[in-house]
Length: 161
Image 1 (cartoon, helix red, strand yellow):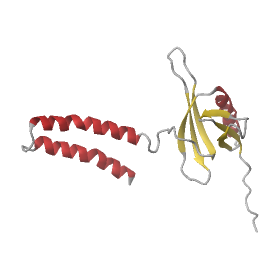
Image 2: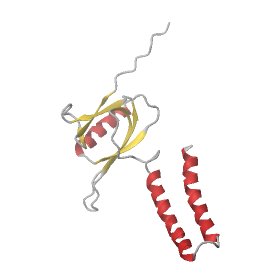
Image 3: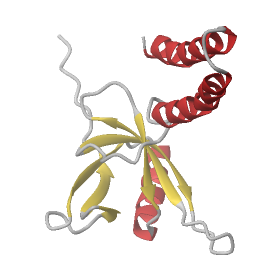
Image 4: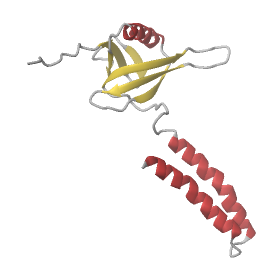
């Protein structure tokens, strides 16, 4: 349904501008204004679509999640790039993963590197986000929040009868 709404959001303004442009009822300056308005509509839609699936969000991360993957871009001072960390996580109890974009932090980089090594050994990793006053052993992710990553408890299957 979302894809249909996005498609309609692109087609409707185009049809309206075409109708205004081809209609003889409107003055030329109104037609030119409608044509100039079209890129503004598409620019606004682009920023709206960016928050949908597939694009990393800067929203607050869930309190508890399973870490699926991470991508770390270290700062490059020669190009004045700050660096960033993208996390692909699945909120506990949810089936759909989501990507989150965090500012680069050296301690978080080290934690994620260690977590990635444990994941390669087959150990699932879970994370928690909380206030700095609670934990104290994680990495800061902004807004006085701290992220910790640890081994997930083993999955215990029910006994077979």
